[in-house]
Image (tube, rainbow, N blue to C red; front, side):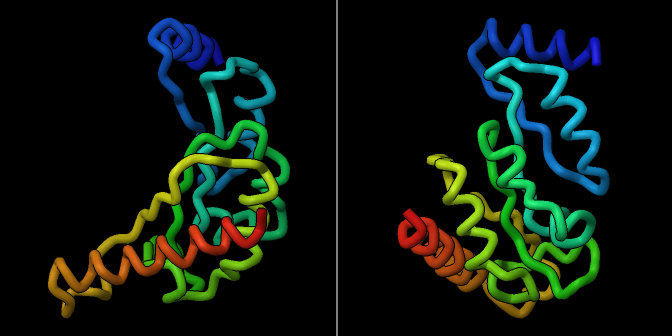
Length: 144
């Protein structure tokens, strides 16, 4: 924890945010966020890590006051798929409702990979990604 305290001090000095992402063990995020009260140490919500490892826990509800970044992507129930939103099994109205309830005002950031999209041109893939992000943004607007 001492290293993260030093990171927090530097983040405050240089006015940058550092985000702790939920991975396969959400307790690690909680330990850091509960121990380090710096306004520059926040939470990065990853939708697939949440769906794969801690889906029964309302992470945006627990850490929403520290939410500074999103990693939104979908999967079909397998780890590491990184699909575009709406191409898998994640309940996006539920997820976006929980994010909206936190008051998060930051960017709707996608984290897809091109696995499974090799047949699309870059332009087609980016077009689909834009459509997904727009739908997610609209869900945030409706939830306000």
